[in-house]
Image 1 (tube, one colour):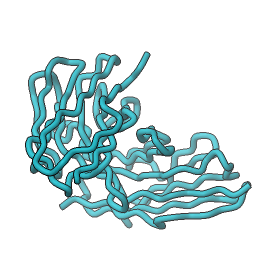
Image 2 (cartoon, helix red, strand yellow; image 1 turned 90 degrees about the horizontal axis):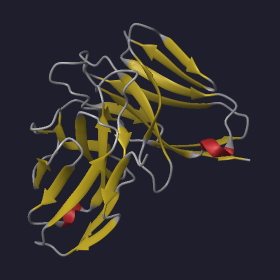
Image 3 (cartoon, chains in turn purple, brown; image 1 turned 45 degrees about the horizontal axis):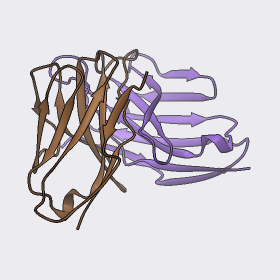
Image 4 (cartoon, one colour; image 1 turned 60 degrees about the horizontal axis):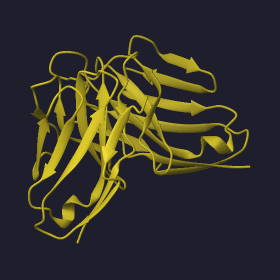
Length: 115
Length: 115
């Protein structure tokens, strides 16, 4: 069974701090790694995504770091804000063919940013 | 532009009852998906439809059936509900799955309780 393992389950940081969420995967055929953000009562929404041909991708305060040899990737949220308080999911899938965007999700991390 | 619309938002069923969860997207996307979200388990793919006229099983298809009614609509049916199917169900769509520029777009979910 394809798996993506995510940690920690919950995370509390102070406003202005750095939030770090880690994920590890097993299937070397995965080549698309998105992060989704979910607010209470809403569906997940894409935050940022990366392909394994780069080791890092940055969009504003959000950065994905990718370590292909270790089969690990992480989300860093710089200058964390109370509005970042949400559940974050990492995910992975293969590309094209019969993969059809079938994402395998991590277990989720509940982030709380205190003002 | 509504995106992905799911109905109903909430539902309570008794064991053995049947129901259909409805999903419609107005983004002219080719691919549609049904996921379930359970605490501590992330989102798991139930069924997906790569394009109109095709459907296929995901990770947890047992107890469910789907119909891709047309390009816009993708329904999920529970023939005989069980307490293990208590969950939050999310429908999603994408134009070109598994690419950085074509993420999954999720609806806001149907919260189902089976007693």
